Amino acid sequence: MVTRLSNNNGVVSMPFVDIIAQPEKQVFDGVTIRTIHGQKLMMSYVHLQPHSTVAEHSHLHEQMGMVLEGTFELTIGGESRTLKKGDTYIIPSHVKHSAKAFDKVAIALDIFSPPREDYIS
Image (cartoon, rainbow, N blue to C red; front, top):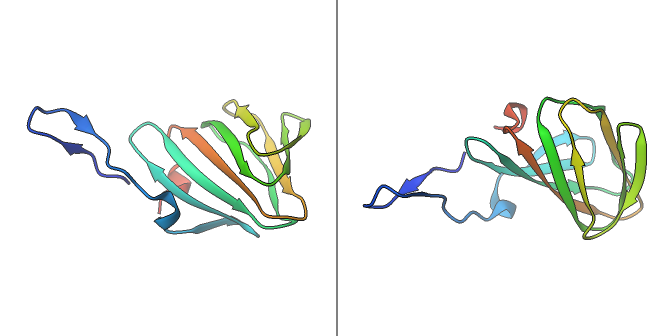
């Protein structure tokens, strides 16, 4: 967890964090994440190897994200789209979703609220 810092005026702020320097965690074959989180939200840098898949699943967390590099197919609630750099998505709580990478590496940035306890090391 990123530690909160406070100055002499009692103002709370978050430090700067290099998410790439955070420990890597494998969540599916060929899919790794690096995360930071506060009390109410989490950011996850997702790295998908070529032809890797994120199995269909759902969770109580609201999720949104953005493709940073490459392309992949994302299915949300039975609707599939091919996403490319700059595309964004929103996955409501408890909605089933999955992803499939194509023949090149894909990178996405996911935001979760509340933080996913299963992603916190």
